[in-house]
Length: 352
Ligand SMILES: NC(=O)c1ccc[n+]([C@@H]2O[C@H](COP(=O)([O-])OP(=O)(O)OC[C@H]3O[C@@H](n4cnc5c(N)ncnc54)[C@H](O)[C@@H]3O)[C@@H](O)[C@H]2O)c1
Ligand SMILES: [Zn+2]
Image 1 (cartoon, rainbow, N blue to C red):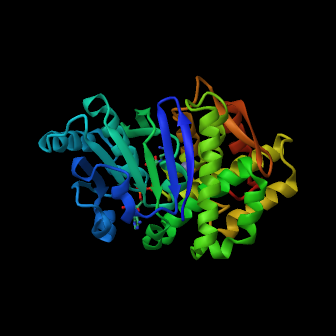
Image 2 (image 1 turned 90 degrees about the horizontal axis):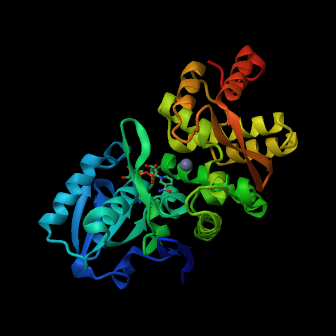
């Protein structure tokens, strides 16, 4: 049996099915009227389990998430004579789901669509919440829209073919969800990190379920990211800057970003030192880094170019305990000052 979480958004309802199988996909869509969008890796590894629908494959990876790929998909949809009764199924990680959701939402002013989420990161994060879009001109997700998929199948069996790096990307987001809103989940993760890393079915199911519940709860209360949804950005202000400057995997960058944000939370008096130590320990237990060596000037430059900033300030997510977060506006110059202070060698975490 699988578990379902229903998300009610302004743009529609979405059922996230945790533990459902790709083999049952044909129950949820009109097979003959469906176009599957996937990437070459997922097609190679799991294509045999797809229903007999027409397929569009794209190259794997973030570089594919652009308007050229969307155009290629539109042209294929024209070729396939797609009409309003057609259905688009995105099968893959966050890249495929973001592109497929965007193409489906815009072609013919919107087709029905759903996802089979095949990475841990997309199951716990990317395919939940109704954000779709692509990158442009070096900016991530700058073109896109909010639109809920009809369903998301989180087939846990698909996770067994992921690399350790891809798995860790997902664990980074699970730690984030626990840290900002669920101390119980955080404790569970601390206790079961070994089983989690070895993909023990029961443990993974519980982690994916709890994560989707947290994200969908926040999204339900603030679909268009005006307030609470910003908490989901915990660790991502510094994280995106680290990712951009160092070219490291998202999970590693976000983990170091959570540590940087945690440290700032201690400095500001929001978070107790022992809670910060607990965050660090959990990040380490999941095989993620708490230290990075990077070029400070480049990190500051990347922070300044964060598209989420408003004039000189941005909404920064601080931890106020394990399981609670607060969002405050902070000026870029203050963040910069903070990074520079560390440059004097007080901390080793982000030295140049
Ligand atoms: N829409 C949102 O709210 C949201 C939230 C978070 C992240 N995202 C986006 O998600 C993207 C990252 O997602 P991702 O980490 O899933 O990346 P991804 O889609 O690039 O997948 C990572 C790699 O794993 C491969 N892969 C996918 N499923 C596999 C499987 N079962 N076995 C083996 N390999 C498999 C892919 O081919 C790819 O090479 C980013 O573009 C990010 O912006 C979106
Ligand atoms: Zn993330």
